[in-house]
Length: 458
Ligand SMILES: Nc1nc2c(ncn2[C@@H]2O[C@H](COP(=O)(O)OP(=O)(O)OP(=O)(O)O)[C@@H](O)[C@H]2O)c(=O)[nH]1
Ligand SMILES: [Mg+2]
Image (cartoon, rainbow, N blue to C red; front, side, top):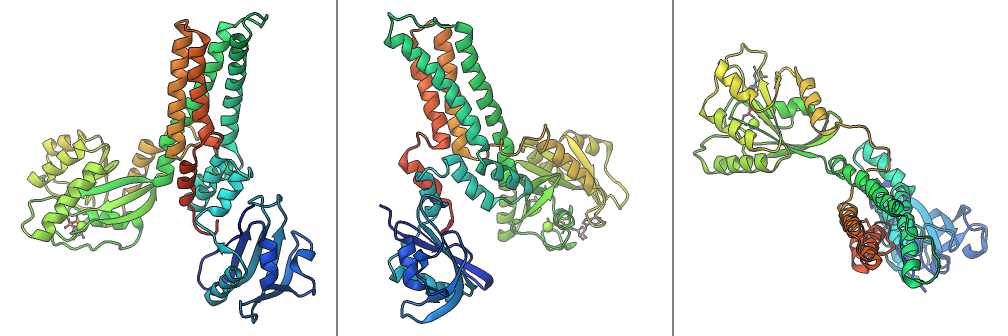
């Protein structure tokens, strides 16, 4: 028995269409109380999976909309339960009244991700596929979208099942040897066992390797633009964005607080932060800004260290070099290339020591391709990962790591000549970790947390 849940599955706002959705044992019965088909029959007497015109009624019985209904019988639906969708006009007033009416007729408000959770519990989707649903909705880049779509189709799950089934074979062989010591069971082929374990390890390792890349594709790379006041940091942010996002003036100390924007550069999503110029600030607000800038530089995965190349470096520039040298990755940006260059040989040397150097004119938007290339080289290198085979999820990566550790232990135990039991325990642990990815062996509290990431109505 499952109670009947209802939710608005589209945005609450003015739009062409808004969809109310229900799932549960009584979904059709509830809909029958609020939806009157134009054909004079009751909804349940109409054909499932067809589009039915009719009137949506308020709980008072008045008509609130002319809409379309589609219902699916269990188990042939997204959730595996009876489901009904009401496609209404996208009026917030209609949708709110429609939802109220469904509640009055016996449904209750669905929780976040409850539809997809039911699909998982009813075996319609495994856990990796369920996570792909939310990844697809959240996808901000085309790469992420394609990857999530392939995972929704079962790309990761299939890999996991392959490994799982190989390990199951191995386990059953071991068990047979332990359980029936007197019977003649094919003796262990030592190389075969080792091969099975290392084959599984190889697959898992290859998947885990894609995680860093997946994380970048999903969350983007945090990038702080640092430099002395007036170096042209805000001008660089604006030039990269293509519009005047941050205030630019010739007054040093213009930017006080950090300004954040997302931007695609070199095929990578950067979370770009323009910061306050690094100097010994005298006023309180600027001081706080400078502190923030230093923190942003220390925490960022990438730093653009901007220098005004039309004048020699000063002490403030040197503190910028120091901050950039301590950052995880840095690109030196020699700005104001439209003006004559005034850096000394020594300055040039100090800057080159940071690694990559790009010469740009933020004001004229010149030389930005070099930054594009730098980012591409730093983050997007390597052969493209086939869609769906990129792990983007910390939970899955953690399970992969644990599976690999357990297999490593199994391998060691096996080659040290331990009894099969010892090897079995480790292989079993690896299988249990792999099972967490698809949801075979996952704990209820973990499942609950996963579906909390969803929106209501999905
Ligand atoms: N000639 C030239 N001037 C530039 C260039 N980039 C910036 N400027 C000028 O340099 C001055 C400072 O620019 P901003 O972008 O505000 O500098 P900032 O580093 O953000 O400065 P603070 O916010 O004060 O730390 C402005 O007058 C800009 O017009 C450039 O490429 N060439
Ligand atoms: Mg600025």
